[in-house]
Image (cartoon, rainbow, N blue to C red; front, side, top):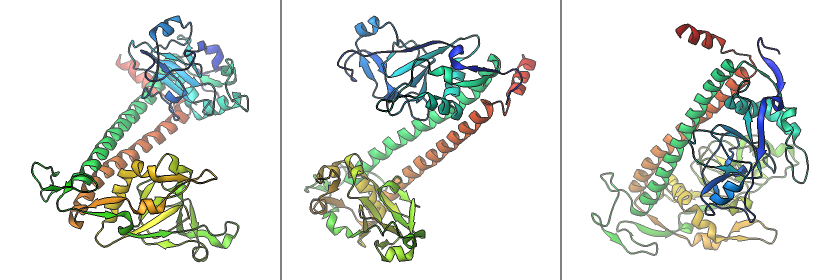
Length: 432
């Protein structure tokens, strides 16, 4: 659809600079120089740039580079590899010297006809990403050629309208970034709280215990509050295994009973699953666990990096890679789930690798792991504090998701001319 005053063009004719960079022979690391050197890992999947864990190159190498010096506002795109097409913009970075490596292109638009932020949002849009994907060539090493912008065609409004559209979308981006920073801060707070609460506990006044104010004792886990006891994971409750009913039998699969496998366990409180069983399927290959069970993954490639833990909100069945624990009466299920979550990385050390490459726990070793347990009343207090922090994180994640949805909708409307910002421009001119 042609929009009044908008001009159809390929982006190649509107971009003045497209160049890649380089890194020293032997590569770079976070400690090999003074100058940030961005690569594909620094481009965020859904748009933007992260400078966490950025690699560095020596100043002398940076000064010898003839291409790839970053300027504030440069648009970046991952030009090869599995994540070809990721787009970011290097902004709000002041006069810090920085560069890109050979896996990125940087782009600078012709300022009189296209502004940088509008170029970024066009490439990030659904239409832009589809056209970029159509320019990727090569199977063993997919990538973009230096002329790929010829294949990205769009309608471009006048610069004042571009500016207003970019201003609106940038406002949403800043709100997303602020929300993500808040989530990261809250997650760090939660991690610290978990480490303190699960080792020192909380007294009847709601204060963290310390050896200066409370009695502690020696234990196999180190110093712990005097009132706590040390148990093993085997004595925490009943550990249950599941299974997978015959996949080819449609009578086993339906909408009745949630069936948990590792790919479902992405949230601490699990409410739903990708697949569900019928009651017949349950009787022919799995096991039903009551609500409030603690589920952990005990086998699978996912254990190479993470230790998924969740607590179920309703009765659920489970597959053979997951254990479901019905805790003993003296244990709060959420306390145990938080403890597993906190200790996950250390517990991964007792996984083994089978001959076919699959990671799995040595269950005898896992059962022997000690855990320090306070009274059930204190467990409940600890859970309350951690739940409040988790609620804040979940609330902000929900807000972030809404912002992403709003941004997607606005990009579809504003970058196509479906909705115009000319009324905002007219109002600004009237005020001026």
